[in-house]
Length: 445
Image 1 (cartoon, rainbow, N blue to C red):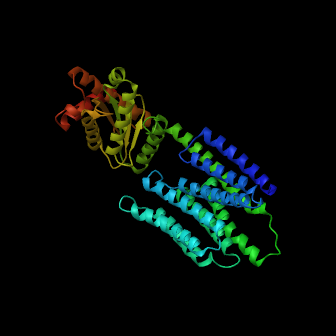
Image 2 (cartoon, rainbow, N blue to C red):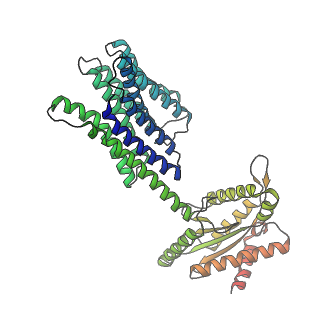
Image 3 (cartoon, one colour):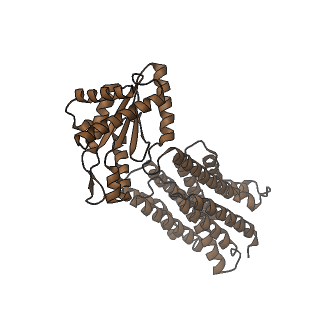
């Protein structure tokens, strides 16, 4: 037994348990893939316990140890692919895992058979290229071509050096592992290109992990008198593990912060974030002596939809309304869900009363049309809108919100009296809209 691997196995197992605990509290789309990768690394160390066994058992243990280490790196790389759910991405993962395992097995079993090694080396470069070319009409991404280029360069390197007498096999093993973990470094840099501790540690750790397979053979060849313990070469693994745990914690913190400021159902800003943005908008308008508008929209028949069709349909209505409103306004404007069936919109400069009311009219026209939901379900809710403009109607946030609310309730009252499903959307001209607004202004005064 190679007992020297036991401490590393225990350390990786403990890190995997810690990683699983963090991931369970805040699962993400990549946490399961990362955990599978760390289980592969634990299997790598477990297999290397039997590396010194004579005969076939030691050879099989070596192949399993190297293949699981390679597969772990490929899983980490694949987890950082933003287009991971594209069908061709699964084919690329299958091509890489298959060809890497085949090459390692061939190099371990028949290191002196040039034709088998050459064929396996050709496949390492050809398989990713074929997958990329086959999917080119439907999907194309520069990150994918980075992978194709890496494995093309690896294939060329192996064809040149793998048959070298003496250290050819060692160079080949190191080149395969270097390519895998350099690919991890590139993919994580692409996916987590942000200024956080977790991103920096993880990307640096993968870079150091890849560098191990270059520095270690160079030191062995040119500085044989310098003895470096094997544990030193395993340090990048632990750095990456710590970095990944930090990334999970950072994502959990960011998710919690997002939930504190956004509506869970629609993803829109909630009342807290809405008030903060409205305050900043008014400060900016006051400083630049410009205008800003506030729209308050209340859905007319949402309670009836909830009571008759169920809360699931009601949730779908709110989500579709949120999507419609977000698509209608500019990116600089803010759409927020400020109540159960109430939405608020902040319209920033350039704007005026006429433009704001035009937006409100178009929103109600959309809501007066039937909305197609799941299957054949069709719902029409209608809405009423209140419009208030800063600084004409109010000089502070609270007064502006009150003015917009009063106008919304006034238009709802008028529409109820006229037995109409909507408010401004049923008026024939902008003059009628302005008359309603002026009437509600008198109420506000």
